[in-house]
Amino acid sequence: MTTPDSPPTKRVPALRIIHLSGGLRAVDLNDEKVWIEVGPDHRLGHFKTPPYANLYGALQNFGFEVLGVDFIQNHAFAEVEPPDWRAYRSGFGFYDLHAERSWSNVKHAANGSSDYVLTLLAGKIRTYLKLLPIRLRQLSEAYNQSLHSAVSRPSPTEIGNHFDNGWTTYIDAAVHAFLSDASAFRDVLAETIWRVLLKRETPDITSIAGLRKHAKTVDHPLVVAVLKSTTEGWLRELSDLRNHVVHVAPVSQSQEHHFAELKGLKGPGGKLLPTIHLPLLAADGSVRSPPKKLIAYRDEEGIKASLKSYVEYSKSGRDALIVCNEYCYKLVGLSMDIKSAAKLQEKEFVLTAADMIGPPTFY
Image (cartoon, rainbow, N blue to C red; front, side, top):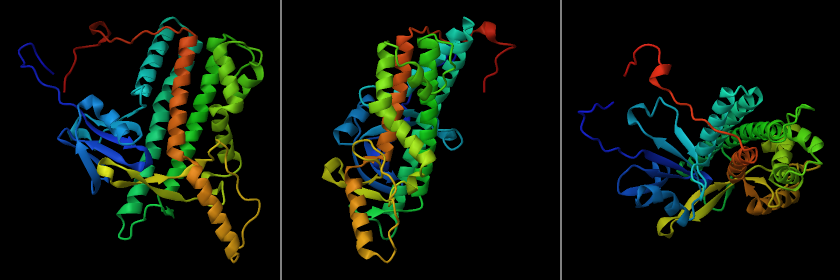
């Protein structure tokens, strides 16, 4: 707290732990170096710290994909406060923060005008705009722990090898949780299209399947694009993947093998850095099905052929963390497209002295 007589203070930029694809981290401690690391005890290299706002671009120039950032504002409470996490997208910045604030303002405006339906749906959307990036962070953390386990043990996994460790199950759990919330968010957005954008009350649409069934003849461009995506685009991929995990087999049992690959990425100075690649989808977006029959454990040739087939699938398969990152960004983007198409009004919540009961207390 400052008073009129307080000397001006210079704000110190927040420290940053930047989540990169493959389980790596970039750590900016407000000094001369940005470290690329698996963890504090396993640093891989560093480069000169660029201007604060230019760090994300510098990382991308090195070939890293930035997924999000943990901001550390107050070191004293870093161990007891939840991370100040924000998802990041090149060219769009912290897209989840903007969307969350925007839908919060929509909810406040709708509540002020006694629009119950919009207030309810905006509140749901705002909730998933908080939850889904957290699910992405949990998956990124599981990747990081698995990578740390693979490269920090006395006999580390070598780049190019496929492996499995105890953290793979945590990756699977994070994927399951992400798909659950992503699918629920998808359905809330479908309901919002029906009830807010199209202003329909009947039938009661609460899922993407219901929207697909009852909005076939709607010629609104956004609705047409969404319905097309449910048959041949990313919404079809998301639905197929979620349905496969729920109704056919969990991630670990959805194909004949379930191994991650330790890949090498050229970092600063040309050094080859270890990253994790765990295929979740085939290159064309399809789900790899479990084998129709088991291979006998004595069938050496059958096992070799099966492993060879999985390795080929892994080489071209789409990585779980990258896939979930794409779905997160697209769902958030769809929420903003709906808001724009429906021309929803925003009103920022402002707390004034008139809203306070009793004198304020400062700690």
